[in-house]
Amino acid sequence: MTGLGRRARQAARRMALASSEQKNAALRAMAASIRTRAASILAANAEDLAEAAATSRTPAFIDRLTLNPERLEAIAEAVESVAALPDPVGRVLARFERPNGLRIERIATPLGVIGVIFESRPNVTADAGALCLKAGNAAILRTGSESFRSALAIADAMGEGLERAGLPADAVRLVPTRDRAAVGAMLTGLDGNLDVIVPRGGRSLVARVQEEARVPVFAHLEGLNHVFVHERADLEMAKAIVLNAKMRRTGVCGSAETLLVDGACAATHLKPLVLMLLDAGCAVRGDAATQAVDPRVTPATEEDWRTEYLDAIISVRVVGGLDEAVAHIETYGSHHTDSIVTDDAAVAEHFLRQVDSAIVLHNASTQFADGGEFGFGAEIGIATGRMHARGPVGVEQLTSFKYHIHGSGQTRP
Image (cartoon, rainbow, N blue to C red; front, side, top):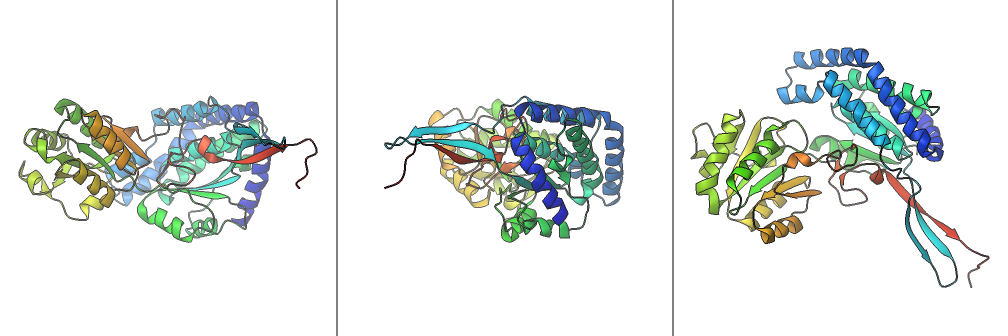
């Protein structure tokens, strides 16, 4: 691990000086290599899937882990799309002149070496590596053990693309072991060679990283997301948004986990929403009012309001209006993504201002919590903290800055 960090630091120095053309050529070569190696990547994924099936993983987990030709092509296209983004390095963020004639510029610079610790999503390997590279950084990637073979095959393909473009393969490396001690080594900073860590996964992973890391952390906390259907919500719009937010892909971090229905419209909106979810194959756990809708609804416990299911399960509660909905989200949410459905612009504005989440939506599905949907090309994760990066972490969020000062012989009195 120490050698991995040292080589990444050397690679980061080279990447910081790489031109936009070099980085873009490398990204295109990486995408081409992923396509060329498709058969071996899919074979590695088949081994991961067989192992996961043998351990009785949930269907949602298997879906997150699964690669097929279409998903692998989407991964390659995502890497190519990063090449099409503007280069974030070297941007002049501010420019001003002091009374003494000093001209000061704030210039965007790479962060350095970025460690990304993520759970079993093979696509994160490519997304994280591509974004770090575009921002002039080196990346050390640590995947969950369940996707180790898939991630390693993708990372090897990316390294091949880097070398073909004349850049160091060490700029994107997967930690070559499943040993959990590797995570501990990363949290210590690899002898000063790691500049920031991005954890992407469940609460236990993020909590461990935040508690033990000796380097800065961009926290990607679990997506305990809510949809609040206000009394002024159009029912058909609410049904479409709720169904998409929960069931489009239940295993992604933008999936809705709790539905809040305004008591003022419960008589007209609650039953259609609950029956729609049940008929779509979603298990519903609800409060007393929700249980009265249909015998298939099971009681919700206190723990349900705090659970990121990542599965076809949703908790449902009737609340006494906007303020109670906001209070529930503040109490149980993870500051990730929350949505309101309403035709009342003033209520929507209040919700957007009061809900302290990285992404807050009005009349739209929580599944838009994705860097690609923001036009960022891809993302490493959704940062739920308040420092430096918040929301989708794309190329701009993977830069820092320094000051360039131009003088004409000034000395300080």
